[in-house]
Image 1 (cartoon, rainbow, N blue to C red):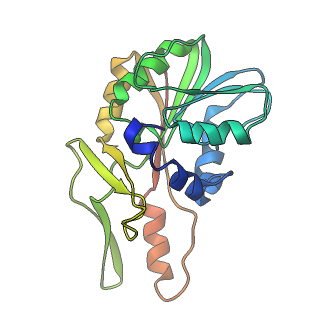
Image 2 (image 1 turned 135 degrees about the vertical axis):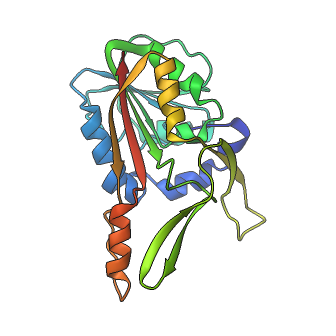
Amino acid sequence: MKRNDSSWQKVGGWYNKIVGEKGHYYHQKIILPNSLRLLQLRKGERLVDVGCGQGVLARSIPADIDYLGIDLAKSLIDVATKEDKNPHHHYLVADASKEIKLGMIDKVAVILSLQNIKKPFGVIKNCRSWLKSSGKILIVLNHPTFRIPKHADWMEKDGRQWRIIDHYMQPLEIPIESSPFDKKNNQISLSFHYPLSFFAEILTDNGMVIETIEEWVSDKKSTGIKATMEDKVRAEIPLFMAIVAKIG
């Protein structure tokens, strides 16, 4: 989501090209199927999608769900409204870290967007204010331990592979280049790292309790002489983390 007006607005075209109408590989194979399973959407429920981007989740949910997608990047919302003709679906260009008044909501999804928002506490505060007493929030993150941009990498030696982490506890603001080898068209967006305990704290501080935490690994399979090694470590080191929380 926009996550930062000068950041994700500029890379909207690049992001849309990568994700596409149905999402990238991991959206299709890992993120969306598992998110829908955890959301357990029922007919007539109201869902808010924070950091909706170009509406990938909206095109994956049952048609009778009352859906609102929120994103600060107008270029991505423009794509979403163009692609999405469902009369139950609506979109809003807004900063979800600032107060947004909505009616009572059944479920909130924050999928791969909270780490792109400079002030995530405000997002969770909004989510708590929208939710019905029986409501739930689903947060999907790039794994906050193993997938820190520029601070986590692979190391290989003697037929073994390790994940190397050189930063974790302290918050980080990390610039991400859209086209690092094409300086003419290169744009910078921002990603924000926080340790897992931070997400537990902002949920608790907003009167929510964690119901479920899941860690999702890649389903890809390697070929060639390194396949066994790569498949083993791929099954052990997760890509994503999902947190489901409810009102305490």
